[in-house]
Length: 293
Image 1 (cartoon, rainbow, N blue to C red):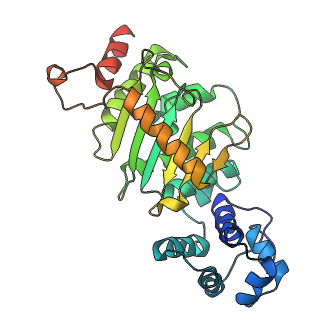
Image 2 (tube, rainbow, N blue to C red):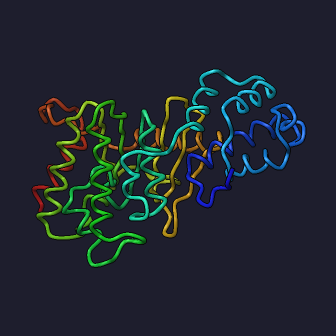
């Protein structure tokens, strides 16, 4: 079997989980490989993500390691057996590998928690807002039109069948930023209100007056699959995103998001009359911003 020249985030994660299981139990590569009927160098390549593992061998490994929950094992098998193909496959070579990895991660999610201090999150951006962000700059490894089309295609996740629960906390600063004309900002703010009408979407605004704490300066996305142990945190970075998936990191960002939700204004509720609210909420702040435009 030829070795992979390009390793997707899904493939990397399967490999990392297999390596972690073995190392947590203090089992050598030689012993694990023998138990699964393979040679140690081949298992090393599997644990590096360089090649795939047959499902029967994965099950043998996990049986040998012991104390592995059935839901976790089945989710890992599903990840391993996946072809990695989806709507994003049509964009192979047209957008970055990061963008493809992100779309695949999102497609397998039952929940998405996201925070952004300076931008409206990509899943919520209008086409005019996206174009304003790109401006005259050519996106890395993509034409502007490909990058815009890809981002708009990602957004179908929010409104399609079996859509994940999406909970976003957006800093007030992101809504006050004018990346283009007031009309673009106006359209984007109205779009947030419309998205909040969806039963699977919750949007809260983190106001300037809220108490700040470490972690509120950097955007992140918490991708929650059906098995929580396989969740992933995606951290934005100028060069390329950083993935965090240890249980310590997952716990850290779950706590951080809970803090953000607690400090943010109550969610946008377009159907609620303003006078029924005991305190100013996210919708009231957006309405104020619309009035000032």
